[in-house]
Image 1 (cartoon, rainbow, N blue to C red):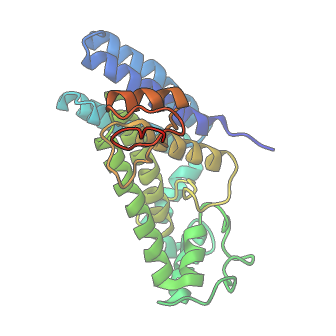
Image 2: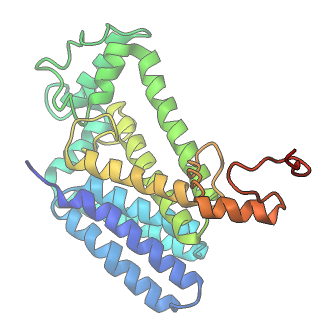
Length: 301
């Protein structure tokens, strides 16, 4: 099977930056050391992924790291620098590859070249239009048969809109909204700063990737080639996404302040016979096995 290292670079960068942010907040790192280490652990992987080339994954990585830094309380000037870095990264990445420029042109007016640059976007919009409100029925899509490329990965949202209609598309949006709500609650209720930053960053990164996919399919932004989390077919992407969910649930499981709605209670440990006897003695009710609990013993006749 094929393995995509860039997907694993996203989660590794977020874990590293969350740890660095905690150290910086505790005063163990100076501002200069903090910035240099963030650039090493996040900036270098983002550049390598961009020149892979995979601009969509690079943007998801940088945005996820930016969310961690924002939650970590970095100065607003630094946030502006991160936003500027993301903008420069996007412009350079678009100009470096001709096919990315074609995607930008197709985004501006996909119907200007419906059989060329705008083919995917036009076919996706036709799928949504065909589905109407209730859809054609599960498995009844026409666009996925030789019309819409990447129907099972990047453009799966268009097939959902065709087969399940507007109701199915809105259901997907609501499901991601519920996921983001639960992730934010877990991040707020985390016991330590590292868990809070990690859960918040991972939740935000998954949410941003979902928004990028839905916006690209509906022609609200250029096609980025990012699959939809939990829905699109894929090996590395699915493994990493489920790994992110595992880390978020770990923060919820061991977070002392986690809300009851998302915190799994720990099973109570059974007491040993010795511990039970000691507790009865402390309560003044110690008695031998088989002895009666009456006020006194009766004399034999």
